[in-house]
Image (cartoon, rainbow, N blue to C red; front, side, top):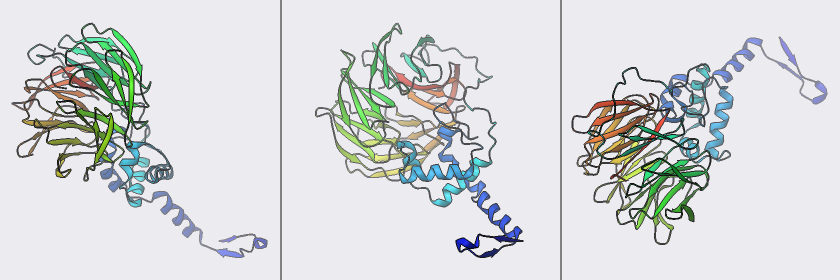
Length: 423
């Protein structure tokens, strides 16, 4: 067969076999290695699920989308034409082949897959008690827009999309961020009564309270700044500009320095809290998108959890990474136990938590359930509390035996943990 172009346009006659044309179109449509894309997708499961269905409403479904569309969007994030601090950092290191493989993999998945979140566990029979909750513990419920207090298991109504939370040192005030409304909700931590709704920046994520209990720092991922809230007036009194994608903060015990994870990829921002100014950025090579952070007992080392499956052990004086440790897939919280003996991190795209020995940096993985994200140790370091986002469960792990002792059913999408006595 011959294909004839209009000769008045000067193209003349072009002769191509139909079979060759078909082969060309077929190659274009199937470019990309599906198996390689599936392997690479471990980076994506924390938000978009292992089946390509978003873990919550703000994360789009990728399963069954057109391959060319997915590749185009990934390349737009890589070049910066599309702006999102998390996505820009995630795709920065992807090659064209990686992008083609990912697009091919997600295009091959069924659009009809069920969401992975919101599943109940048939094995849950436990009730909370003072034995494993010696101090009050607060869990935010992202999908239910609520907060649950333990060991009482009382539920407080909150606002849309309750995410990160923090408790004041005196245990009287609880704060929780609502990124979809650009605000922080303040609660009486004893009664659960809302005291205020405080407007902050765009897409607030982590919230942390200064050791003296006077101020809260809120990481506004969307606007690239930190809102400083006066906890007496419950009003924003200052805004600190930082690099792209601030996600969470950790104060030193004296409150003079705040370290902020810059999920846009720059590293760890160092804030002088007296000046309320970022004074330094420490790069963290070897990880993708610094996500959450905690400090060693002597505050000389930072444990930085990324958005993929790594923890960087960072010497804060030299600014050098001592070690990059592979942990579970997807992002999650990280906590150094108050006794300083271990650090523990979750992995929302997996079913394990990883316990890191702070002396030799060895790792033990503990199977806990589906979608662990929020994680915190008790004040005495005996218990580890884990939110299982896909099971609607809070798991209680014995830090000595490394076994799950209780699984407690909660409301939808338990997200973050605040523990009285472990800021």
